[in-house]
Image 1 (tube, rainbow, N blue to C red):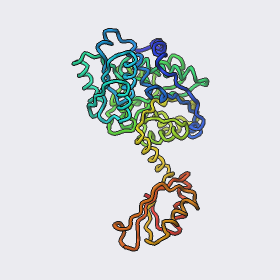
Image 2: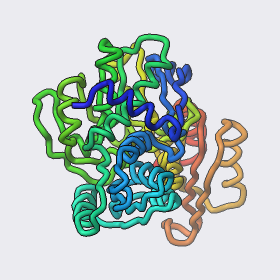
Image 3: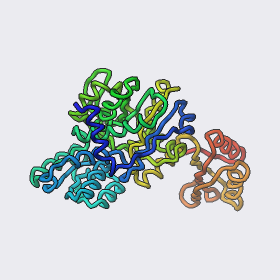
Image 4: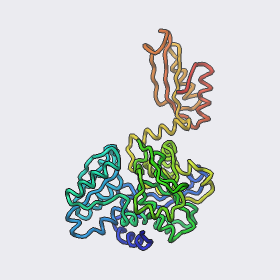
Length: 400
């Protein structure tokens, strides 16, 4: 089991090539969730993720002979970028195996650091099997993304910085959990420096792999998730023993909570986060009574989210919150109707029309009528309801 000394040594080893990211209290987000929230902005690392810490420490420990053989790893993106960047800094040849579903953003950014990219496997497990096979064939050193003591110690430097920078005592440190590398490193630091702070892990409910209630491994259903950075079916061997000893609990969160958290971080903290990076906030949203009034820190562990996915996520959240309206009208097909509806939404009620679709030919039973679909933005769910009620005074309208 790694010790606090291993983490301190890692911090000294990697400090020249790792950004000491800000640890900031976020008042706006705190008011929104009724808890005191401190953020560790790992999305500001050079590769946009905390994963660079563990990769840097592991590569720095390679012998000269191992460096000549080259390295290989498997990752859905963030660990890949960390290995690629620090291999480039050290002049080491690197191959990165990535699952086929990996977002294009992460593939392109990894390739930009000079590593060779191989897309193989439907998920992380299949990609890992292929990477291990390739490592044996080529004699390369396999750099595991989480099941490695040196990687775990490197990730733990994140918690060192949080505790050095946080003046008030923390009730909880909430950490995303995939294979367990980050939470195990953070747990060792917390146990040594702040034993009264409770460590809570967070997993997507589609990859909820371990129950603290029964102390048994679970069989997660898997599938698509916006938190692909923690889409791991089983905790690592080395992290597991640390987690069992030091971690208070691991909770699961649904996809909607992760999506909503991405939006809240953007709105209230003015930061871009990927799904895994928003999981700490998702836990607070999912279990509000548990965390109400508490002093909490969590890392925005990564910011490498595809721009299309980010845009869609923001819109989906607005729809769920009622701030985005999709309205369908059955209207008489005569001049001035569309202008009148626009006047009610925009001028009278202060809504913002985003999109208009006007169908005359095929979707109505009468040639004298038409179907109109409008997407509009409201200030709040209450404002949206005001707009709908005003429209219903003159028109037949349904929310879709």
